[in-house]
Length: 234
View 1 (cartoon, one colour):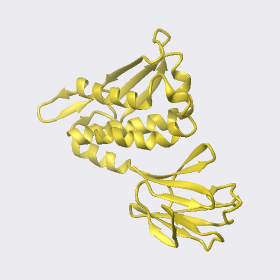
View 2 (view 1 turned 30 degrees about the horizontal axis):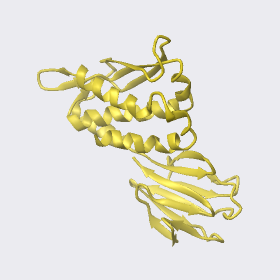
View 3 (view 1 turned 180 degrees about the vertical axis):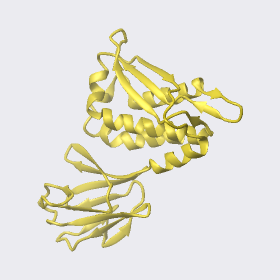
View 4 (view 1 turned 45 degrees about the vertical axis):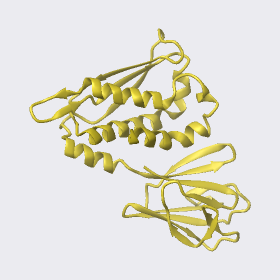
């Protein structure tokens, strides 16, 4: 399932960085995504000319597992919404409303247990299969994973120009003495992103090679001083 591989990759920076120790046992994020996809399949309804899949999912976790998801809940919900859209688009299903994901704590569940209840909840307007595909494509975004020591920061590329450097005015401020005050910039336009060195003292590297200006591809690693910044396109 390509959309589940994308889900794992998009959340990977968080789970493997800040929360790697937290997620060594118990329910894993990808398990939730797999259950959501399964519930979509099991709960779909066949109409005269279209198939409608569930769009609301109530996810119940145990007392042990729920706290581990609190710090990434917003990111998890956003990614699960995208999984719903991509799965529906992949399989030609429609949705009776936009995706809705909600997490709950269920005291009767044991650590590692998971319960997902799916339903069709009508929104103001149904989302036909063709519109689902368009919505899934629109939901694709670009972001940077800034590897800062043992931590990983996620920065959405939600504007055309993002600057990187030590100055407080930079969009991405890095406390790295080998980086210049205004070291590099990322320009995102027309669905693509480009990294450009801003005349820094130590230069900017892309996948280990010095670069002045170069288009970025998913998974590229930018080195600013001694800081590694990963480009992700989803």
